[in-house]
Image 1 (tube, rainbow, N blue to C red):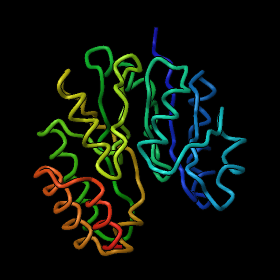
Image 2: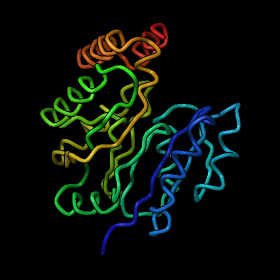
Image 3: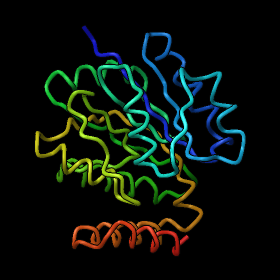
Length: 224
């Protein structure tokens, strides 16, 4: 039997995009999968806009890792899929995940970054290749995992996706699906594609060298 998915969407002030994102998940809900939106304290209409389009709206302290863990605790599915509010899944995502989880305990999709800059295609290509070689996934790639194997996101200020990947990689390499999720390039273009790419590389390098996620989060905020 194919696994039932619990799709966990952490949100914070996403009123502009949440309706379209959740509307795209309607076909998955019609096939029996559940959608859980976890709000981290929005001061816009995000929770109200999300409510008609999901199974539950939950509330948790602000922080992507904390919010996603809250969603995972409330989930009733066999597998967890963590989806950013500005990311869209490919067609038949549930069937792709089901096939992947027959052989692996976790995985992710390739990503396509949408925007005006042609450089975004190069950024996405580099992300996908790096992930395939390293066995480390990013949140933009819509990570999924068997619920029974999910250890929880380390509740750190930044790099929670990398930290979870490291935990899961000890149990096996991820299924790296070539089908693409589409994510917004808004943060890349608002800061400059090259500048953002260099910032993310620097943050990852510092994290690998042992710099605390809290210090990295301050650097990330200062660079906005």
